[in-house]
Length: 119
Ligand SMILES: [Zn+2]
Image (cartoon, rainbow, N blue to C red):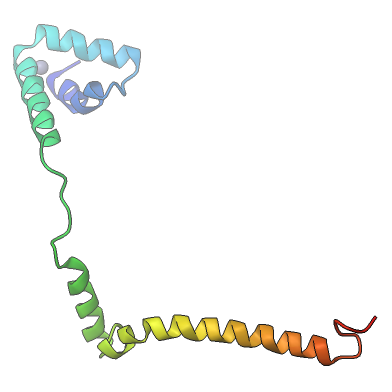
């Protein structure tokens, strides 16, 4: 195995994703090649230091920024202040509609000749 082939497999070798044959080839090359040994040590160090980075998250006002852009591009049709204020009333409206449907159903059951009180 030459330098390039060995170095191309460093990542897979480190993650133990190589087959036994390739693993042995990389190990043999690392034992005999000082340059690649050094490269592999650098690679391991880099990967290890990446692991210590804090997880990256979106900026604090990311969601607000998205809402704002959508609102602008939709010319205020989406996420406008007025519609956002409607969110809670719509939930109430659906509850009222549900109660109304149940009430109408019961009304029909009671008033029909085959209703609740006729057998
Ligand atoms: Zn080498």
